[in-house]
Image 1 (spheres, rainbow, N blue to C red):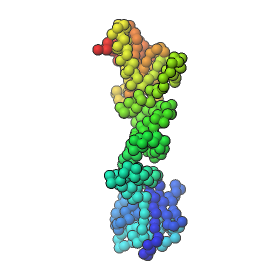
Image 2: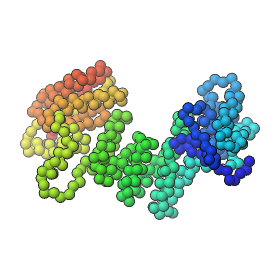
Image 3: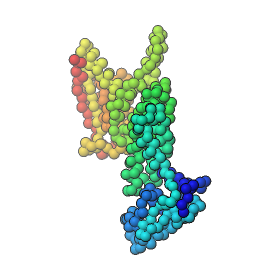
Image 4: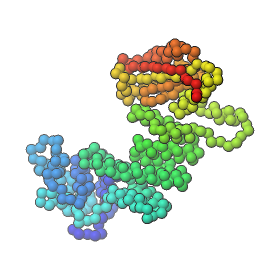
Length: 400
């Protein structure tokens, strides 16, 4: 069956399809999974004659079968039926050799995974100038339509291969974004980040650089909005706080870049932009730290009494709550703090389960009374027997 002109094209990134000429077969959702899984395995390891025992162990390891060899023959028949629309002899596309099966080596098979890997390696070469490396990197990036064999991603043999290509992809994206940043090509950075997020929604790098590129492009409000979405995602999905570099990024994007103006009323409007007059002031931890330091400097001169307060939510054992309960509880506690404190008071979400507050009050007892009122208001809105709120407070010391 030697035919140098016939090439088999296989896509495995983001889906699975086999193409010969103008004929194509695609793994559809409504089709039986096992024949497609076997075909994927044969093509992935197309350089081998795969022993019957290996295939039986792979597909019937956890199933009881009186005749696994017969079941494999039946499954192989179904695989060949899948290949019939391609118009070539299916017995030659999938061959049997003694006690083994394999994918044809008589015809050239071109996989997107091989091309992707090749381009990634070429893009690493220092022999090429950066412009060529960026071009090669973008070619590889555009080839990666999604993760390796996504419909089979939990198969034991798929997981390490998926991890390999996904790691290559993550390194590639980081390299592309750094090169685009050097060129100040923020529109392309935004496109790359958005495409990456559609494939890998929880990857921190893509979100970081999207926020950064939006800001550098002059879209400050969009940048801040995406920061808030990502911040909420980290809290709600993973019960983790943003990394230090995200907090530093927030400092940059929340800072107003403006030209020189002599109109004080315009400056006043800018300073009030985005604020709300309802309840206490909620801010990011980095802003809270600045306010704390400002108050510590002020009390050195005024002698005023201010207390730093911490509220912590946990289960009765002092452990983190389940994510869904944690999210709801923290939202309700935030609302209780905002509505219980005065408009001039400041609070911030300090961690996945904690809020910090600054309370200008004369005594420890008065501060404790305020915290108990917050907890009481919280329990009116969200009462659970498996939930505990603890508090602590200390005086703010003068800045030295």
